[in-house]
Length: 239
Image 1 (tube, rainbow, N blue to C red):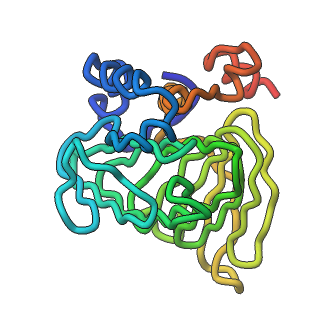
Image 2 (cartoon, one colour):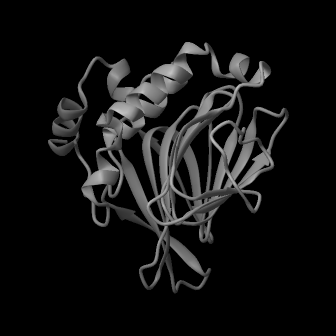
C-alpha cells in the first residue's frame, strides 16, 4: 500500500482489494458493461457486500440496488461497494450516509455523511457535493475520501485525492487542485464555528481509489500520467 497513514484500520480491511472474492466481484460487475447500462437492465449495482448493511432501515441483500434517495448504514466489520451512474463508492464500517438525487435516478447530487467514512470516485458528467459536519465540498470528476471524525475539536476530514474541488468550512473557503492527495480537517472553535486546517493523508489507500476508478472505466490522476502510485507518492514527497 502506498502513501497514506493508516491510523485505525486493521489489515483485513486495508487489504480487501487483494482478496480473490473482491477481484471476482469486480470482474463480475465489469462484465455487465457500462454502469448506467447495467442499471438500466435492472442488475444490482452492489459490487461487494460484507457484514451487516442496512438500506433504508432494512438489511441490504446482494441482489438489491442502491439508488439515489437511499440511506445506507454499515455495522461493525462491514463494507459496501456500489456504483451509481458514473460514480463508485466504498462505504467503511460504522458509517451512515444519505444519497441525494440529482437530475436523474443515476446522478448523486449530494452525499451527506453523518458518521464513518467513504472513499469515492466521481464522473465529470455533472456537479456533486459531499456534506459532512463542518465541511462542504463541491466538485466534478474527482477521487475523494471523507471521514467524520471522533477526535475532540475536529468535526470532519476530507482528502482531495485527485481533481479540483471547492471546499468550505464555516466562513473559511479554499479551492483545492490536486494530482495526489491534498487533505484538510474541519476544526471547531473559531468565531465562525469551523475552520479549515491542512492535514496528512490518512486511512485510505491509492489501491482503493484505483479499484473504484476501474469499476467505472476511469483512471486515477497518477495512472493517467503513466505513474505508479509509488512513484506518484515519491514525487509528491519531494515537492
